[in-house]
Length: 435
Image (cartoon, rainbow, N blue to C red; front, side, top):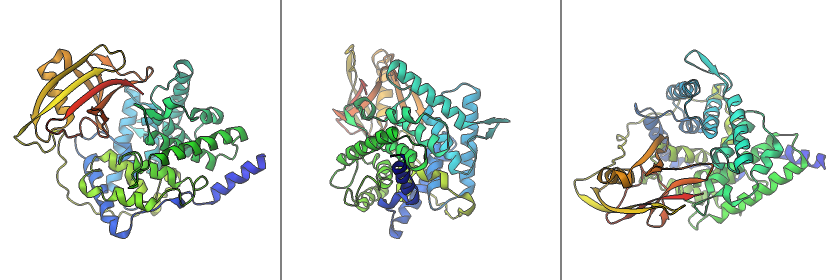
């Protein structure tokens, strides 16, 4: 039995994993160049937060601007050291992305130097991952979420970190609380979980038969669920989850047949959205770009920077708008509601007038100014923009699996509060709920 398992693993190692993937055509490459420039423009702006996801995507691209990438690498190195030295928030998923970005930049993630200090991101990630597992053991939930746990395993696997194989196999066993958010299957979480487990099967020759069987079953279930989310036009989940879904499907040649999905249809569909500005947000671009290049996060450990070309021509793009976007002098009216959907302690609504072109965050600010008692809220800045942490003092709690969900009517938003542009007469809801 063991010989059969090892033979299977050798077969995986001997084949190029992305045989089910596809890349943009030469005619589509200007769209890739546009996204690369858009990410660079955003990431190098004075007010920009250090963003490992953008650097990771830039390093996985076919074209590079090496001087810019080095600047971004220095920023995330300084930020990582600063977070650890000053006890700032540094979740397991963030540590994983910082480590991956360093590895992709051919900078040893075990020796991250800044401010006269050296930091071992892999060792830190190992500790963070153990803390996640301990929290699951005690409370039934991770400190962060299962998307971040997937990033942890993917990164530790890529960077040869230490983790329990049997615990990891069990970690990804299908359960609703792991892969569903607000009652909807999360393609993002599932895709990262597939990549993490494919990595284990592809690189760990000591995989136990029982653990390997569990991982195989996990992957097959996840792939089936991902494909169930594919629409007739090729989009998988929503437009923003499609990029990581392509990554997951493209490395699953042992589990799928070429007839399982049409990579070219999906790729052409997302590329058609680039000129419309759909992926102008740097995080949206970063999650899509590897798939456009027929690459995945599993390629990080094989990047050879010495043969990388410095051939990306930077082009001038229109200035990135603020969170107010393109506002006009015309006012529109929004019905804004905040509600506790967990304990049902309150539901408050108000009519808010904002300039046409405003985003949801602007609506929330105006409502707060109008009635601070009922509509006060807090947020933290993230690479995705402002993330709502509390409303009326009711704070989201990972251990209780609660968060503030953003909706238009009854439809969950696929964009954040700082990106979603509201329309006249629209009903916007910020709802305290569970995942």
